[in-house]
Length: 318
Image 1 (cartoon, one colour):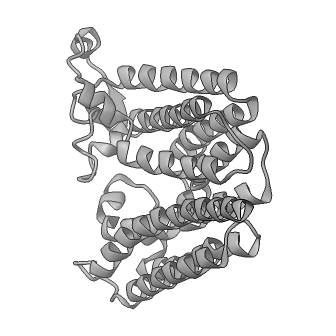
Image 2 (cartoon, helix red, strand yellow; image 1 turned 120 degrees about the vertical axis):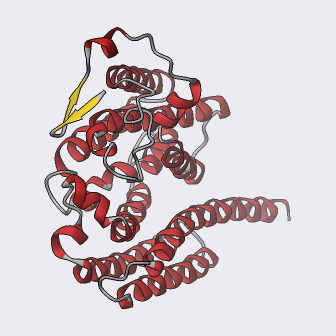
């Protein structure tokens, strides 16, 4: 495959080539690190939702959400193959490295999308399947094909795609959407800009090289660092919201409050970082902590849920 002026060109030889892609190549196409976060937050939504779901149905729901997320990743890599080939962070991905052809990735992604939505609808419920279908559409069409290359607010709006999994998990159990599941959505939605803009700060040269209008390249480092701090504060507030809404205990609120304060502190350190800093150590630390923060918040939410259930059962025995 050759990349010419941002277009995908497939030679006749490539079109007739027998695929030599391995299982590992196709697995990499699913963006497994992103998929692990999707699985975890979807599972959290499923666990803390009120009601009961058969364990087999619950497993099918999580599997379908995981496959749908992987399908989104494959379609994203298919469309972004031209810029992935230029950026150092993504040049080794299966399509730009030539291990998988664009057509193979497209067929793979569409097939997985269709199967995951259909099975989720048939085995679980229509609402969960509809939310999964909308999530895939939003990530691939709205974010990847439109927002990403058009506006520096791409991450803010496009971040909604990554925030839907706990809502889908919740819908798999309850068959509905509620203020609680919307709160879980908001935690991830508000977390996404601070997380990705920290990455964009120390990868801004890569994004500039391919013409993707990330906030640091369009508005500068200072504006980006200010925005990161604002979203860190909003994320910390959303993180403790389950306690004030009554579906998590005060203990959860204290723990996630401390995690939120640390998130804000890392954002403050990032804001103090001089413009033009080549090492970008505070931004890298914020990026790393943001991942830990999200896993910790949803872990605390599940642990709190199990603790409340255990305490309620114990009181019933006593």
